[in-house]
Image (cartoon, rainbow, N blue to C red; front, top):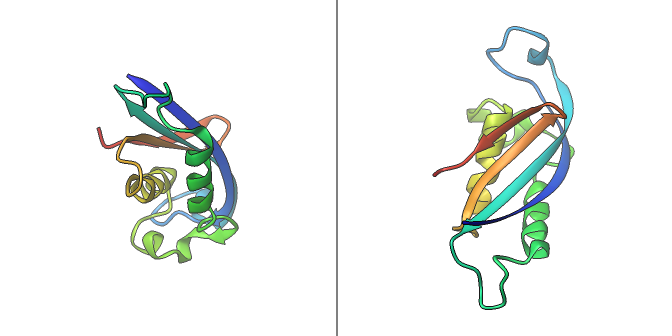
Length: 119
C-alpha cells in the first residue's frame, strides 16, 4: 500500500460544550492538519498523487475554518468542535474529491492529535 500525506495549519477559536474544565471557555489553537491518501496502485508515472494538488485542495478547504470561531460554523453548531469532529469534518469535505483519502489527523497541540478514517 502506498501513502502520501501533506500537512497544513489553520488558526481558530472554539469552546467545548458539555465539558467541565478550562476548555469550556473560548480559547484558540493553531491546528496542524495532515491528510493522507492511500492506494495499492500508482499512476503510470510512478506517482500516487501530486503533493501540490492535495496541498492546494486542503489549503482551500481550511480557508473555511481559518481565523473563525468554530462554534458559529453550521457543522459545529450541531457537533461539538472537538479535534475529533474537526478531523471528521475535514475528512468528509476532502473525501468528496479524493475517494482514496485514507485519514485526516488534527493536532491541537504538539502532543495531542485526533484522527478520523473511514476504513
